[in-house]
Image (tube, rainbow, N blue to C red; front, side, top):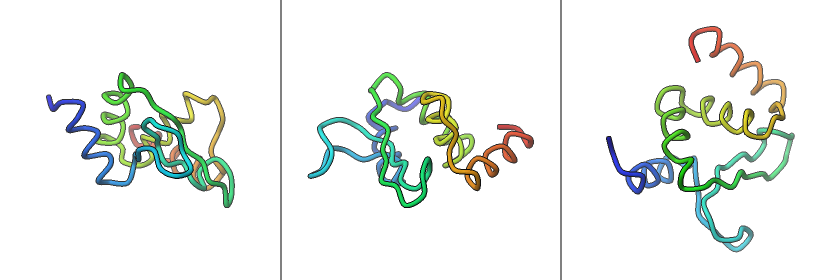
Length: 94
C-alpha cells in the first residue's frame, strides 16, 4: 500500500486534484469543471482521510470513478453526457 502523500502526488500529476491557488482557499480540491454544469467552474474540497477512497475509485475506474465518488457525496447528478457514461461503465462493473 502506498502512502497518502504518494496518492496525492499521483492524483495531482494526473490533474485530478489541485491545491490552493489564487481563486481557491487552502486545501485539496477535486477538479469538477464542466461536470455538474455546462461551462461551469467547480471543485469539490476533500479531506485527507478521503484520499484513500478517492484514489481507489480513480485507480479502478479512472475519471468516471472520481466523478461517481463526488456524485454520491453531493447527492447531485452530473450533466447528462457524463452521467450516461458513468452509468454505462457501471453496467460493465463500476
